[in-house]
Amino acid sequence: MAPRVQVYNDIACRALDIALDDCKLSSDVQGRAARIQASITTVMSVLSALATGPWSHWGDFHGRKPLLFFTLSGALSMELVYLLVTRENTPFYDYAEHFIMVGPVLDGLVGGLSAFNGVVHAYTSDCTAPGSRAKIFSTLQGMVFIGLAIGPWLGGLITSSIGTESSNPYTLFFVSSVMLALLLCFVALALPESIEKKYQHSETDVSRRRKPLKASIKSGFAELLAGFLSPISIFIPRIITNFEGSRKRDWNLTFAGGALFLYLISIGVFSIKYLYAKHIYSWSSNELGYYMSLLWITRAINLLVVLPLVVNYLKPKHQPSDPLSIWSELRFDKLLAQASLFVDASADALVAIVPSSSQPAFVAFSCLSSFTSGGNPTLHSLGAVCLHASGRSAEVGSLFGALAVLSAVAHVISPTLYAVTYGTTVATFPKAIFVLAASLLGTAVLLLGFVRIRNRVMLATRL
Image (cartoon, rainbow, N blue to C red; front, side, top):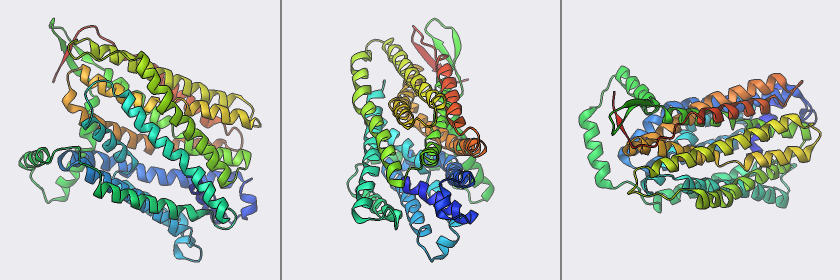
């Protein structure tokens, strides 16, 4: 990730015809680099938002394994594009600002990171029992951050050992491409499928009978639009009927989805935070990589040690025989998510308050923000518990597809929002991005406050 930031800065310098030695101090270069990064993220996110729903629907019929393979193939395509635009004396290098957009297009067409996260959560749900999944989701997220923490340290070791920091800092793209290729081999040859083939075939046959293939472009576009909108419809409040016969709308899943949406927008501050740190403290790619590793390490510690301990000691025991047990689990996930987001918002607010010259304070508050990384897995678990509590456990696959669509849409909005904010304030008040992040997280905490904990068993009914 650190060499990617370097790529954006180098492309911005060449586009503005500024000497490399003067780039670090130029606010114009920072603004141009932020716009390049935002353009890449926005294009990929728009395509991901359109493709995630249909791909998730396709995965329900054909299996999680091939969908994992496709999404990882898109990630490999991105790395190969970065390799090409950093090759000097080539057309790709000369037109890097334009050609670099090919990567997000290829990655976005297969769903990108949103589809990958959605299928991973769906795969996990296939293999786990209903109820609060905060612990298993936290463990998976912690494993991800261990990898993210190891990556920059390994990259710094490679660049320092072969002396590429000053001559060619982009050697790491070769390493990441090889690792992604090996991961594709693992998925293709070793990873088991989580959906039984018999179930896949029967569902495919039903789908074909219900929705025959249409050759016209109009019907194809309609199906694409339906694939995008149908997962989101799960957040529409439904009528809930208790055993006493009273009927009310259940907004819990709506508020949980809204909170996750705001949280996903808020974490877009991380990509701009790297540009901020590189600009304010003049860090090299290696120094920025070590900073990233420190953030990922604190996230991994939280997700693999702290959060599982909290869940083990404080989470209510799931009792299938007690119909009210699920509401205790819902209350637990709600409070845990609120606590994580509140501390995260406080950390961003503190970064905005302390002086920019205090580098240790910036690093410390960044680590505090990373230490509250339980918000994402807890919000996913809260959504699943809300669904189960309303009597709709069978729709859990659709839920994670819908959450993946929310993630894709959030990543469309987030990069532009932060890039515009940073680009317009970097010369006067560059900390505005942290104020924005804190505000979004505070609003998410308030939304979670509207999630209701009921004391009676409810049944979902369609309108």
